Image (cartoon, rainbow, N blue to C red; front, side, top):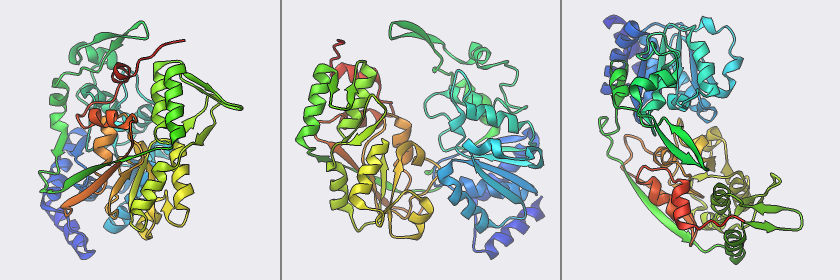
Length: 428
């Protein structure tokens, strides 16, 4: 074992790659857990190097063929890391949505599951979790990776590991039986119906996972980066405010060809979220850019700088393209890394698994309701060598974004009840 570790250490150093001391420690510890239990969870915060660490575990364990499953946006980064490491094993990198295309699953002797918390839906497993469960059956070793294994509830761990034969909850037939011992099940009223709430998982869940989990934070790794957040308010076009005001009053706006309908609190919240940033999706399913004020502000203040832009709705990307043009903006991570272009990414798609360390700043066209999106996406520029990074939030003056921001910075999702407490909804 020691001779093998030294061999790979020298090989990496020859290629100019040197694992940090903590990564070497994690590689050794993870290998020991894998030999004993068949799986390990590397709960390493963003930018602490969990990708190279997991690949190095495969090297130390002398794997021959590895399947690396990640998000589509992260594939180019994963492939680059593999080529940089140049291990003795063959690796296939694929995104979760294409997992069904993998042939001869039984030929892989290790599976690495990036951003594993994406399989954490409950009480029923997501299609992603079901698909991964099937391939887990064929692999003797599985590494799960995430900086935030349970971002919203401890219960999110169950379907991440339920396909593993030696997982600590394998004696439970399904999630509901697991709840009998590990969840404080309550009920709450939603639209007049009493619905069971399974989100209050007990801390004992993570205690059970301790023997299989290696936690490592940015603080542990010696990160001293400070993220400076700036809020810029923009005066939107008067028509934008008129549309929002009328929709709040009448809950419907009928145009010549399209209708904006907000006949439920959920719809009103969503429509205002769109409108205050200058776009709208009509009842027909069509969508339109209404106001370029935000896109123009970003262009005027940041043009000539290589930045990362996060947007929420698809039409916001069209607004950015209209103002920036194709010569200054890309949506491809590889092109961003190899050119002077800025990059525009949808918040949920770009919040994890990628690095925007080459950006001079992150700029948010809009903000997501999810606290997870806030905390994960704003860290995309962070590296161990970063001391300062700047994040800019572009909010419509008197819009809904500041209310959302106040919630997510407190690690709380922005909810319908919060929206209704401010915006009186009168059903027609």
